[in-house]
Picture 1 (cartoon, rainbow over the protein chains, first blue to last red):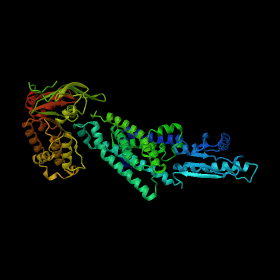
Picture 2: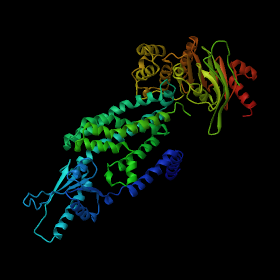
Picture 3: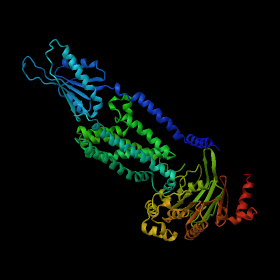
Picture 4: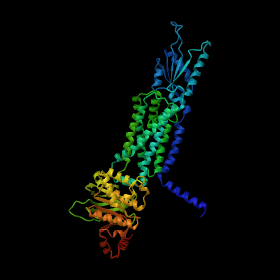
Length: 367
Length: 249
């Protein structure tokens, strides 16, 4: 037989095996389709609008600033008539990405009072998103000054305050999220393989015949991996702090306590996926089908705020979205333990949901 | 319907009319079985005849489509944990963790089955089945014969009253096969009930009673000698061929 015939023989067998594994074949189509949809409709960072709040001593001046920014692409004023200090508060409470605080102007009663600058308070945890917005605000300010009749008056001046990440270090934004991504991918893979490996190896049948319940099997199999997830996340965390000067403004200890929950959520999910997968390959593809959209819609690769509303709703379903908020809060924003645990609530809900699914799907029988 | 061995003592297994289909294809039909302590029953027949499906249903691994019955007093459709504790199940595939040592595999079985004195149980298994030399060896590194010995020991380490064995001697050398049959006789003498699935008709001839499977039908429940005589044959193999021809298959 010729080499061509042998190659054809091998190719034919591979093709037959591929089309006779429906889950593998389906996932091979679903994953690219999902990528096309997500990249096509959800991931549009260039069209994202940076949310802005304006606080001013008078409504008239606030409206003038809002009008000046209205024509700027990529900016969106969502609160235009706040009292002094409230714009900064909104930035700190994650309500907006940029706050503009207009100063008290010299009045007739106090004409020689020192003129304070116009403050632009920027949420530095999202450096890539706000980097382009600040120059636009500056440009709008100077256009307004130039348009005045008195060209010698340069106005109160601008003072840009970047909170949490004053040097706009991209690695500070990236590293807290990377802890979550690393643990997520490892745990979901380990979760899927732990059961799929047993099925293919033949030990699953023996395990089903033993006097051990679904929840006991699940817990027993996943506990060691949860410890691995905790260690893995802690290693990335320590490397981030020691090599990249990642600040620890908040309760990093609380974040470490959330790590096992986050790891367990993905382990159990992987386990649930593998209860429906006939082979390890199919189980791994199921894992990819989950973590790919999680990375795209959680704020890891693209700022969460740039996603359309429907994509944000889906994004909130992923534990990674909440872990990234918790991690950035613990490292950069100075979140207290209570804030971090608040972000852990959706992670716990996800864990509870997938645990129920995994136990139901964990067939006590082979049929 | 084939029914074995009815006495006034409570049977370990009493099932009737068991049936199972996969994707519209009937795998077994109308199988009945009663097993008492100390019985050795052979599920005998060609590959694909429904022997493994029957064993799996008794072990609680498959839900029967039809039929009813009890295994250790529990409904076969809803086996309880206590019921599983009393069964030693040895599947046809090697079902121990290949990356763990033999002793770790045995420890795992002890933990799951709640064996009180793990050390003593393992020592007993090692002595009874000659495993001392391989206790620290990884299961995946054992030869086929040794792997079967270990799997056999692992199946009975919790001293179950009922042992379900699916082709335990398939592919083994004559000496290991002989050992396994010797162990089975010894266990039965101690009062363990054993159900053994085999397609080897020469081995089946040494069983006290057999249930002959052919294409999902459990056709006969009797001793091999009775089966041979009833088919006017000289051997079990000849009787089985004659039986199949009589069914028109």
